[in-house]
Length: 452
Image 1: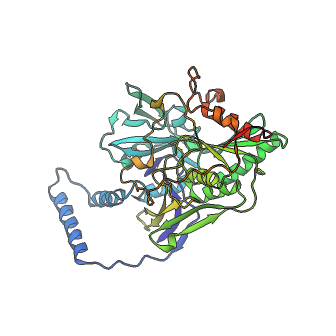
Image 2: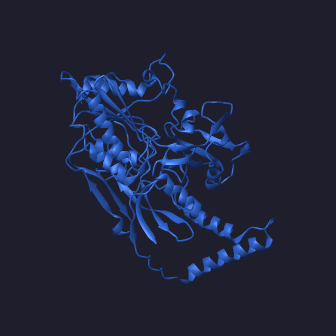
Image 3: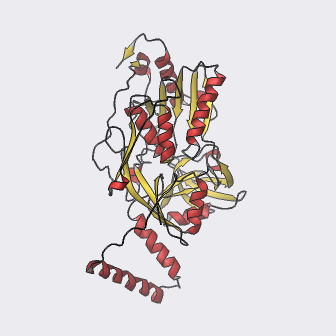
């Protein structure tokens, strides 16, 4: 059975992170593909190797394991997001769509024989332990990870809530390994956190789980109520947002738009081609918006950033995003789990794909003044077998519809010397946030001087 879902997953597997499905549309079985002599010869070669392993490998291996590894190898050799999921893995994935699940709360991928952290999710054991994007997990409970497949590593990191796990981390710019002990937990993803900074409404969207759109709308309503209707501008923080559900990404973008294209998908088959447009009803009443992004902003978060940027609705600030621009479809195999396979790429309103390149911010603002802290290589293009941009062209940066205030020219790309070290619970140490506040307040102020 084929379940046509537009699934935007940033990594091949997740360790307790919300990767999920939109409502499935069920299609009939895929017609068989005519076989030719070359296909039979290759299948014969596979059978020969399979039997040789069964007969002569140093230790006995089950046929089930060999076939599973062969299927997964075939799929993971296509791209970083295609894979075969056994029944338990498929069950884990579907359980994660609700935004409540067990694990560490961390997005991972495979890199050079190690497991690389893409993003920890706010409020999870991984985030509380100080794990950062770009960290390499080199050992689990003292056992080296080199050469271990991603799915096996993920299985080792999963476990009952309340159980402990020790990770050994290699961090860029730090000479000695970092040892971190975490306690696995049932993770409740609170999609949106809000705060008022004077007349600026701040919204931090952690992931695009199934309630992201609902929570964004509730967040805006909460900010309006707390300010007695006097919110003059908004900041949408999508930093380290690993993405999630395509339908939620579209809905969130639509929340801030009255018109215009949001995103389109194009695949091998015409049935995979779709386009989505905004509807009337900007929940912020047209107030200025600044979107914060970084290299951990991926997938559905990139759709929202690009849609608002290219429809000239928001100014994007931060650093270049991850560049994950593919759509996965789940094909269920009754009694055997499911096949997750890339079937389409998504395109921004400009007609260009974000695959590889991601979203380029209108204003580049780094988190720190130390280049080693930026982890510039944590992007889709650095993942094994990643798709290259089909157009070979970067998505254009379009000028914002609202002319930027003169204050934009006073924002430095890096914090000044002496800027305090970033502490997540102290907004005053967050240079990107403080610059976003400076810009959006100037955007909301009565027009005086302006710059293009």
